[in-house]
Image (cartoon, rainbow, N blue to C red; front, top):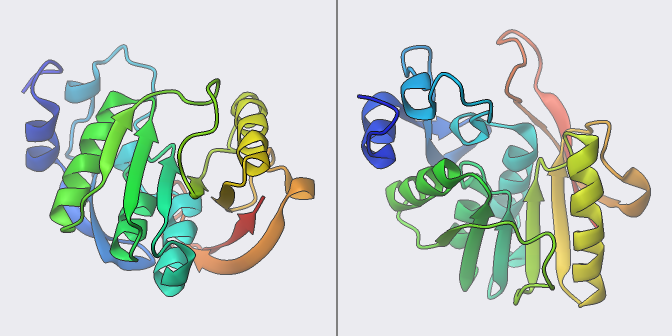
Length: 212
């Protein structure tokens, strides 16, 4: 299969559908050493396939939502920077009336749609960059692991603050990466969860769920 092959077929054939670490209620297509992701991405593609692995910020936020379904029940929810879709799937499982999962990576949108189907939930996966637009039509924005780089944090935070000014609630999941704007956040909960890149023998990383 080449990089131009249909992404849905590649993901279902070469990736493994596995329970998510710390969130076994949700199964995700996950990369492994034999996946050969370069055949899908292309050898010259420098965009990391964040959607193919688990990350602590999304994991901790999904865990929080499943443990506290009232957080999203009956609400219009946006999963910003959805990646694998784990946060949006958790919201859909927990009673959100509408979930829009947004990412700028079209392959993440494909993976999110597949993962949602495999978990028996409905969400709307969209490839878009909404950070320079107006506040969306939503009651709650969920953000897992979007503060891993200073340049991205500088773009995300003003957008989220604008959304809060429009009375849209914002929840953020993060393992405490350096660009996280702690001074603007209220810690709601901590969980020990796995993070991509941590050695298998290492202890789970304490990660937090924050309100903006």
